[in-house]
Image 1 (tube, helix red, strand yellow):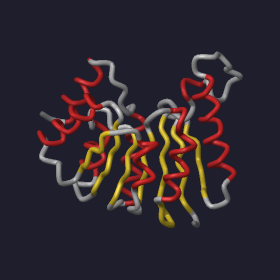
Image 2: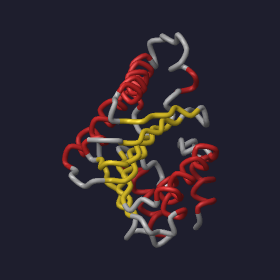
Image 3: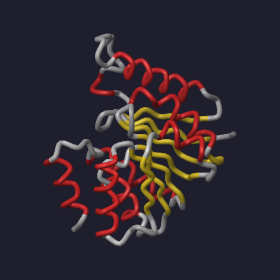
Image 4: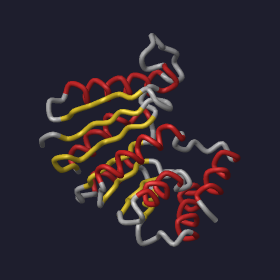
Length: 194
């Protein structure tokens, strides 16, 4: 088992995983920041956590939360196969419920879970941040809907909440935010002050 097989299996099973160009940007951030603790929301099969750990030569501790029990168990298996269970801790459950129970301070947050919950995730990420922490939100442009006049019922809540996330991160004077048009959009926010 290796990272490429985990990636291919996810693609074959139509499980959404981080896009290559988004991953490249995050790898550069990780190499620059050298975080000791990462919190990921949306484990899927563990691919992104494993990639993050790999980039940092496994010199990092990652908590990752996954709602879908089947996917979480697959992630746990993948992590075990690669001998990374000391580095990556999969928490099974709803991030909205789990986040308020966490009190660790994290260096990097990677938000890639329910799009309609991004504003809640942001609030918790800020609470669990320290000065200099970086909050990454994937799929922030959501197929281009967020920056268009999209208003179809099916995705309306997700689009509205992603717009709210962008507004909150760009208007919060304690955050320095850049919206990158790579992959499906990546918001990069650095915590300047708390």
